[in-house]
Image (cartoon, rainbow, N blue to C red; front, top):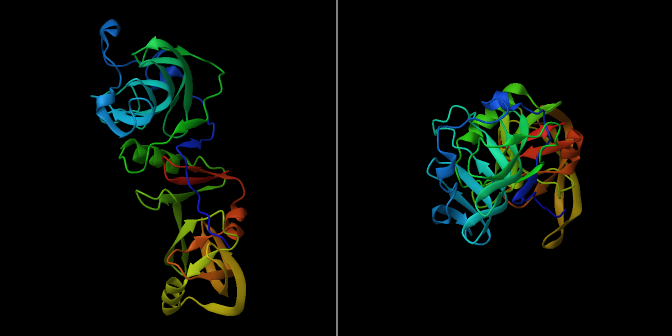
Length: 301
């Protein structure tokens, strides 16, 4: 049993959801922004406001004077290529709904090409820019399939829009079969964990598609036993780990609930490490799912 946690890369797939009209965002045929003279508009993002990565000629994250974040490709100190803009929900621009992000393309610091406004709750609007520094100067692309990949904002960078988007998912229940909360393991480790329970006692699980069988650590088994959760010892088996073959105990837990699904008399393994592992024996029961990293949710489809 070789534990191989999900590592979420910079690019993560997102489900294509219902579209939204430009009028719903704040304009008739185009997005309205606060008054400005387009011909005098300054650069949207500057390399000297870089927060992470390489904002000269690479992939980096920068913040502008309005508190908006751009995470994507840079060339010669300007945004150039594919990236994502995370709009500041507190910048006072009431015509861009709080929690909105935009998957876009830049050319020499200017918006250029197909972009997708991604609103809380999964609504999307596809538009096209041509050499623009004005978010309102776009052409709406009716019937165009929204872009399905984006640069995900690293977890260590706070963006208040995350909470807004999360609440929208929980409120509207986008998943056809349910929603499970997942969380980054730490600021440095982008593995995800989910919370299960047994007899009312919470169990944090590392979400591990590389593990065939769900397993609990020795310490957690001892803790749950003290709290009255019943385990039945069934023997031992050989498991392949990163350190080679080792013999581990196998047990049956009387009750285990994950994502609203209760498993009774479920066979589990025992790990010698500190992490509890949610394996494919349980994950596969959920069927089709996706992880929405911005909202820290696992969507059951």
